[in-house]
Image 1 (cartoon, rainbow, N blue to C red):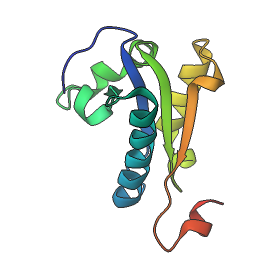
Image 2 (image 1 turned 135 degrees about the vertical axis):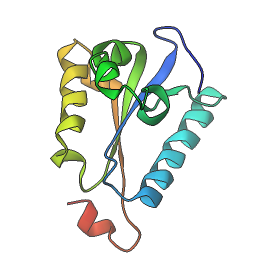
Image 3 (image 1 turned 45 degrees about the vertical axis):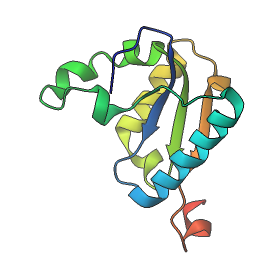
Length: 121
């Protein structure tokens, strides 16, 4: 990871740690491929595990509005548990409540292999 200035980060990545890791990786790579095809470069993303001090999580979480405002868009990797996780909803609510347009949010489905129909309900 490396530091970025405000508004130079392409996307805030919102996801549930409880969703299937392999399915999430596939969704992330699908979105990444689309981004590279459109922009001709790798995306710059804000990803919690890399961007929050894991030894001082509570302090950094208070900065959520700043982290969100520093990103051009939000990409939601929405799997079966995403909408049941309070923190995921807080991220979405905060992004919109700050006056960011819903057209700045992109949803990518996180579907487990063999459970695609179940996961998309």
